[in-house]
Image (cartoon, rainbow, N blue to C red; front, side, top):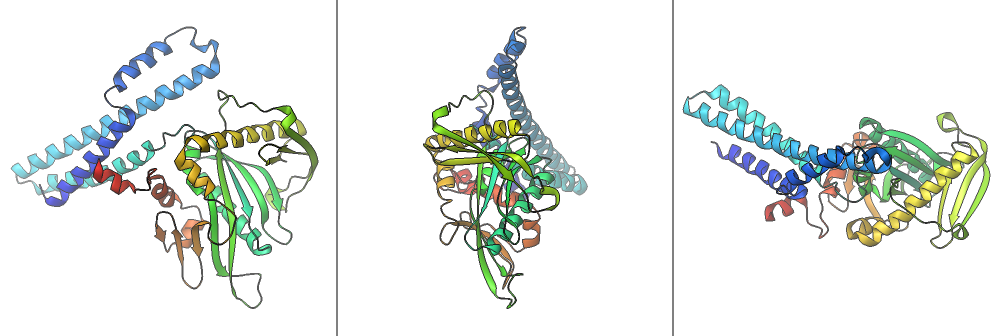
Length: 375
């Protein structure tokens, strides 16, 4: 077997090892038996929420076992094919098996990355909030560009996107917007996007065609599952209704029934202006509970805490990523040093590589490659 192929096999074996660690391979069959026994309990669906949670957990375990077994089987089969092809001097069989192993390496690496989405709320739907920084029209326009980027990313992944609230800029763009993004692991993928995003470009609003630097902040927090109890003291909140209007186009929604909830102990303010007053109140309360839940996650999870506290003010020194359109083309993440010159692709929602690089950082700040080399 060629040295290059041996290295590919070693990489796949490393991925399998980490996949086994993530799902606790030794106890997985026993845990699956327990799940199956509970699923057969005729009283399970007496509590639908509890039953749905159990079914989700069971399916996650089944998927993890099937993924591990499938990769391990494909690895063994293709190694055997290579050995057989070399014994029989069949170069075509060896070539096909080597190509299959190369593809399997990419699949194993992706599954390894997905296995990192095992945080308490990673599987949840998510709220994504965008706020323009200082800079007036420039920052408002940049905020709208970010909104478009994330909507494109979500749509490419088959996620459902709902605009919860939006405040239009005075001349262009948006001052702020909040989206609910629903789909498997929506929060797990998007949580790495929390922070300040910096844009450098020739301003379309400057007649002198000078370069401008704009900042906008992104905050991502999970939608709270119904089975998670978050207590909100009515005495701690103020609920206001107001008239809201959008900037025009598809996001227009003028209503006298928009709702704003202010949580006095934390200073959290949430709004909803897309439904009836009753629905807006319900949506805003759920958003508030999600924000409070995020605070609790921050206290218990150092990695999530670091990501959100690093958000800081939307300005110099706090950015997590720079998008440079002039004098050259580059998007660079300052946490992982991952970069690309395909600025158009990124702004059209090609964010997976950036999310993957950040997700692969463990709590100690080591990259996935460093962690794997120590495994």
